[in-house]
Every structure is written in C-alpha cells, then in structure tokens.
Length: 258
Image 1 (cartoon, rainbow, N blue to C red):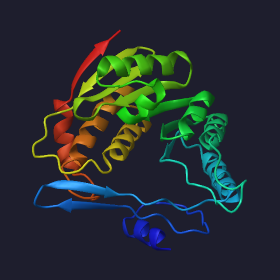
Image 2 (spheres, rainbow, N blue to C red):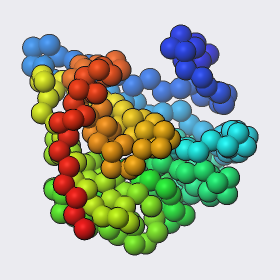
Image 3 (cartoon, helix red, strand yellow):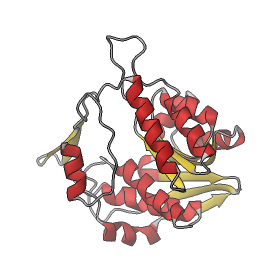
Image 4 (cartoon, one colour):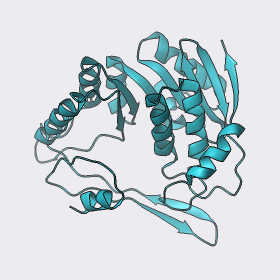
C-alpha cells in the first residue's frame, strides 16, 4: 500500500486497517503570483460498517497497551450508497469515546460535521474545534474570545469535555478547564502566512504530545498555538519547522479569566 510505504519512509510507527476503497489524496495548490493557496479535498473512501468495526477492534487491542491518550481526528467517511445500512453512523466517535474511557485512557477529539454532537454527548477528555465548527454548535457567529468562552463554558458544564479548546484563527485560541479560561494570543509571524493546511492538525499533535509528557493544558495549548502559526509559514503540505515553532512559543501571550 502506498500509504504504508510513505509512513515507513518517514519512520512513523503505524498499524493499517485494510479497506476496499482507496485512501483519499487531498491537494494544496500554491499560486506563486498571488501567493495564495487553494485546497482541493475530494470525497474520501466509502467505508462499510464491518470496516468500521475492525477499526474499533484494533483500537481496543492498542488500548490494552495502556496508552494514555488517543486522538480521533477528521470527519467520518461516507457509506456505500448501494446499501442503506452501510457507512459509519453519526455516533461512531461516541463508540470510540466509550471504549477509550473504559480502558482508562483519554480521548482528544478533533472532528466536524454530524460526528461530534454524539461524541460530546458521550463525553471526551479534550475537544478542539475551530471557528466554523464552534458556530455550528452555537448557531451564531463566534468572532472572538467572549464568544468562545460561552461555548467552552457550556462544554464544561454539560460534561461534554474536561478541556475545551476553541481556535480563533489569527486571534489565537481559548483553552478552558475547571480552573478557568485562558486566552492564548497568536504570536506575530516572522513571515507572510502562506497556507493554513494542516495548522489545526499540527496544533492538536503538539498539545497532545505535551499533555502526554505531563505538561499542564494551558502550557501545552500555548505550544499548539505556536505550532499552528509555524505551519502557516509553509506553502504546501510540508511539515512545519520545529525550530520556528519553538521560537514562537515565548511570544504566545496569555490572559487567564476566572
């Protein structure tokens, strides 16, 4: 499989679940004249329910190895139109959340569409959403930290998440826990922003890595904001520069509200 080969070449430890359809390939086109990037994201592979069950079975086996954090990222794949019962149900991530919790691990959820309301009803450790996803939850614009605070407060009080992180584009992000709400203001970029492709994924990867290392949520999220900023300096899908992310971390200003 091409995806396995690419992961092997990067030295990334992985286990694959074979499916009948092909893995999606998304493209980022960078126009040198306008210095703008364009995302081309075709529909992903169609999954049959039994393929989804195989993913859950693999998750259970991995959780037996006492992994402390599990990241569920991305929207759910579509089903097969020829079979009315095919496809992953909207509550698929809720099933993931229950299995992770039963294993004593913590779920970091970063998804969109119809998948996250059911997962939030089941409860997750950390939920990360961007402005668009936040607006789909609130039903109104989320333009700044006050709007994000209202959403995060709701997620905490309803038990949907123990930690809520709402990202606000160029403004930064709001990280909320039972101890309060912390505004994390994005650092000034050392160059022009070229593309936001992978910025959210990079943020989640950085903050989860630091949480797993024992860092507190706010500090971990601050590195996530710096990492997202670093990712915006690359014009394509190339990985962000780790040294740039580390240099931007001290420039992430924080303000804690009760």
